Length: 113
Image (cartoon, rainbow, N blue to C red; front, side, top):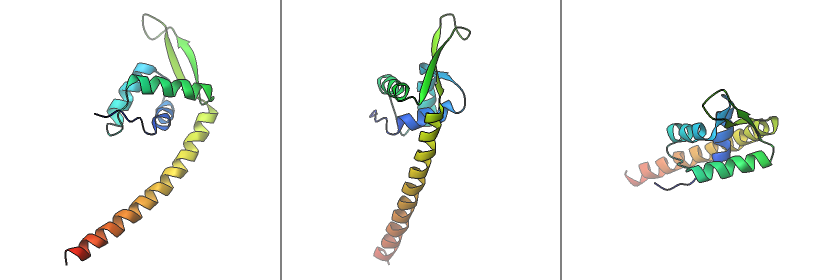
């Protein structure tokens, strides 16, 4: 399956609103929750690095979860603001796509009459 990673940053930020995760957990979450937007570990970690550079996630080391310390990711206020903006964009796109589907169905109905 093609590894697209479309909107990976926004999905990561959304998952981080639930709780802090380490990279492997985020990859599993992406695989389980967004199967039509497959990503691989390279896309995930590049995106996390970019989000951290932009101040949308922050990291810390957690020594209590496993035998070895793990780097945990946590959403910041800037990351939450990106989600708010993305939601607005998605609402507009959904509206446009619903219009398209409605018009397409009308065309199909006319074509088959």
